[in-house]
Length: 329
Image 1 (tube, rainbow, N blue to C red):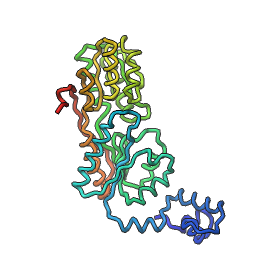
Image 2: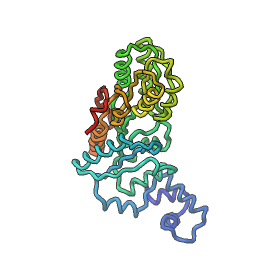
Image 3: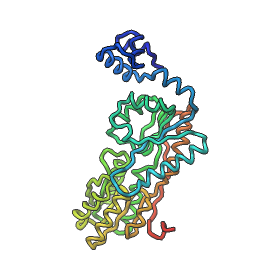
Image 4: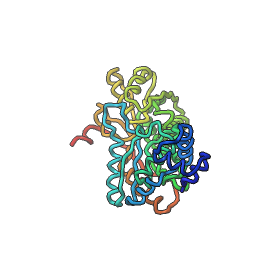
């Protein structure tokens, strides 16, 4: 544990000066304040007042850290399922739980994020869909300051586990079924985001399958956006035989565009969202049990909190054909 003495040494000032700065006392120059504050951030120092608060609160408090999709008017079904699964399992295991969104940490340094979670007695964090290019969050993972479970990312360490389905294989499975059912030779693949681990793995899967089946593969990025997939379909679908999408939302956009164009192309998605049933046509998709994944993530975090080693946990997926009658009550 970093002490006030360590901060004083790092800043090159007296311990009493550090105390004055941290407690907001007058008589300290702005330059000195800045040195002390920077030293505290670099060392991830938690003031005694916070440390005392931590010791008085109950143990077993965890956080869900997720990126809520605010760019679509549709309900973020995946996030809601994640939250529901985690809450139910946390209640069973008598763990206190809070939900934090990426936007709430925007602009914070790693030290500030650590202090933010420590101030709320957080012992472990489940992170959903961390972007591959988010340097701050990856630095948080690498500090080892908390036990962590990463959903949909293939990375584990001593205090970090990862959990999710095999996205590469799942993409192969659903695309193979759709391509062979329709005897397709030219594949139009609408990929997710370049900074998304699941998106990158799914792209690897379709590339591997296209090579295996000797199919021509044409790839464009739809960024998991229904609108972008719709526009890409208008532009490129006529000269391709089948449209494989890296998400259900993009598959819905592609299918709606095809209906407007009054042409038929088989489309498959990925995720198993209820919204797929309202797309107007039946489509193959990968079904993930998001609530189940989140429930298993809570169990895995408890495993880490009890001293277990970090590991990779791969959960099963299934291929389904989503239709309207399957979802209406």
